[in-house]
Length: 299
Image (tube, rainbow, N blue to C red):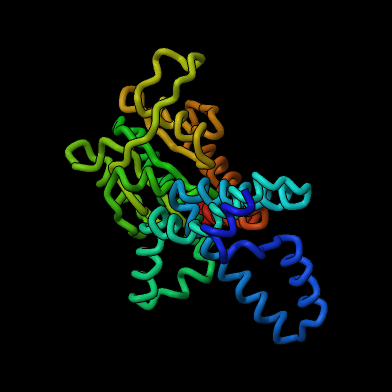
């Protein structure tokens, strides 16, 4: 085994993971202030790159790579020669494989750099005010479409991005408004028969296809929209709003559970509690109470 390794993989014959880690720790002990700043900048860039990977299934692949790295460390620690050899071989060829696997993500990154949108990659874009505006537009539109019995299926992304779902629809990346939402779900609209994806307070995509739930406990009177909402909430960290085309009832699906027959006021409270931070939610409730008080005083 050792002879074969020395012949075919000479660059790795002196590789020792534990020695490399000890050397890294020794370097950190002698690091100066600028070295710390340098490390923090690199760490933040890596963090933002990892956030980009969340848009696709590449995130699961990245987690698998981390697991392999941990196994490699343990194999080196316990002296498992065969496993260490196989993993070192995989590491040697990994850069070439990763370029092929992550080609779409790398291409998107280069496109953003070419457009001068580096700040969007490095600075978080989730704005609570924009999310609150999306909630207001959704509640207003759903209240109107509930009266007209217009079918609605809206997905609010949370921590997990739904890149694979977005790929099945049409990207819009537009500011939300009740008029826009009602136009998208209008019966003769080409995008009405799919799901709408809300990302970071934006109407990101429409006409998307969602997976159906395979649960046998769902009521038989539920249609495809409700089963798709439950299925999406089961497989991803998201909040889904549904308006029934048959009854006009408003429902919300979270974590595989479906809350049905909600009023617009209850819908607003559910979305605020699930999508906004606690501090922002409290401010929204205070503002709503002030508006109601002013309205009552005006009468």
